[in-house]
Length: 116
Image (cartoon, rainbow, N blue to C red; front, top):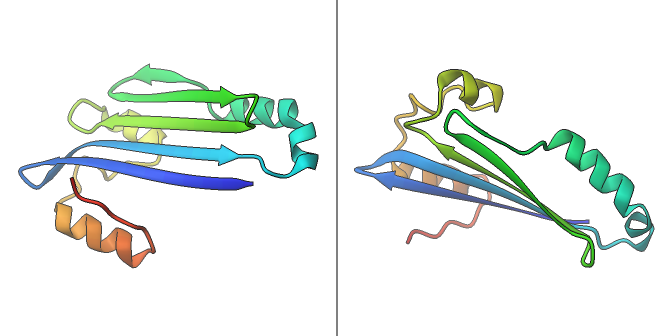
């Protein structure tokens, strides 16, 4: 199984405005591929699409290539405190980290960062 996570952050005046988290899973093992439908069902139960209170979750499935992708988009300014807490981001609205701080922390954790 190959898993890739891509986190995109949009800053304005050195304040985080939006965040997108993509999780791409590709099944490469033939035994697991045989159980693709079971895998998808399990993942779908954990990742139900929604769009409310400034946060959305979208799911894409590629049966031919055994790929499962989730994308969570968070509009920091419009997301409610309750919705952020439900998704495990309770401190995001009050985060004072600058773009430089976030980049340094992510790289320290082993991430590869690109600033556009």
